[in-house]
Length: 218
Figure 1: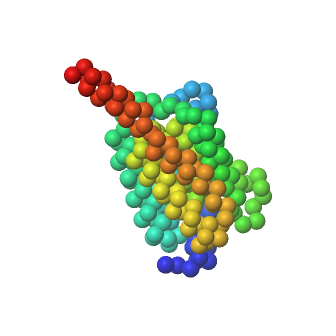
Figure 2: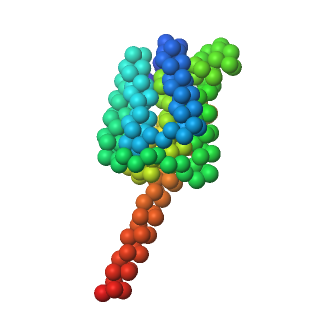
Figure 3: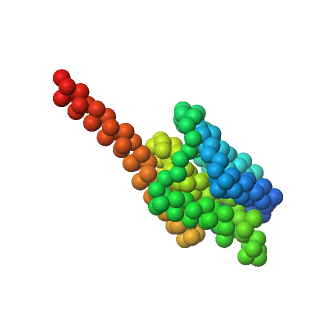
């Protein structure tokens, strides 16, 4: 496995070489937020597919800068999320509770303004060129944030796949690469995991109540 310094150098290269792509992703995020604010709600299937696309972008950039590990992992996770999304129904995404919304806003803000890997850049540069869609952690932060705004798509496998990936990269980045900022990703990881674990609870309660009712009728 490459040394931490080599990994960080590759991530810095990705952030520099892919700045036009990062700008494009920021425009897409802004358009998505505006659309959500004016009432647009995608289907859960569409949302799950669209949220996987930034991960494919990271995978492509990882191969360009010579990081096959990130290329393979992000490519595989993106394909998994798209496959899981294809099994979701066509009902529209619904907002969740206050705490999932707050966690989502924090994660989107982190992904949007991620203050790392742009050496010597002015602070305002992070508003449009932070490496979302280029390197793992800001991308996972932003994607987890949008997922939380949609209540984790109310799907356990999809949410857990994203959360586990976020957990792995948050810990590796914080403790192997020394980017302690990425511990903030744990906010999104924990929120997604809690939401995923509780996602089927109402359905389970309903099933148990229905079973009890049938037993009583019998």
